[in-house]
Image (cartoon, rainbow, N blue to C red; front, side):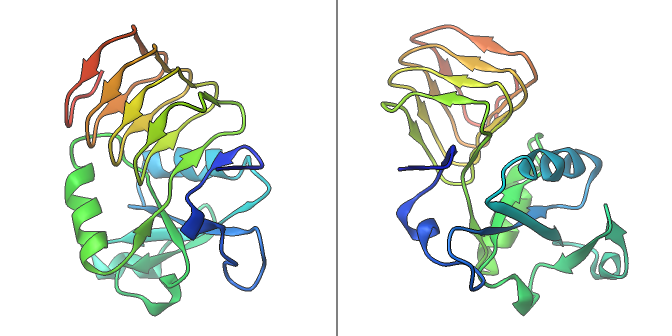
Length: 182
């Protein structure tokens, strides 16, 4: 389903944090790239970025990023939050697995200026950035990151943990493998 420009799954349409229609989001991990992801997520009025998630160095929870707190991955205050993956490199797998082990749930996020065909399928934890295009019958596996202005042609599949860099243009009937950055 599409809700106010964001692609969501039905489980994510439940009331979050007591306010219906609001998506409480934290970005994993607290990195320079995650700052850009958090800033992009703020473009949508139904998303509230509540902070960042650290999986390795607990002492980082004494810091803030963009004036927002850093939570450790096992913090009970993360219950009810969706996680956005804020890293576009192969390190994604490590952070995603650590967060999943702790019970965190990854949301799929589509920027309001992106266009996703109604025939496309997006896996969990995907991030479709500003001015991206996902054409007819594309299939994106889990944790695919499409950075600003990237384009997928019709009938294209993208593997788990793949990253499309800003402006990447993949033609129709292509396959981008697992963990590939293009």
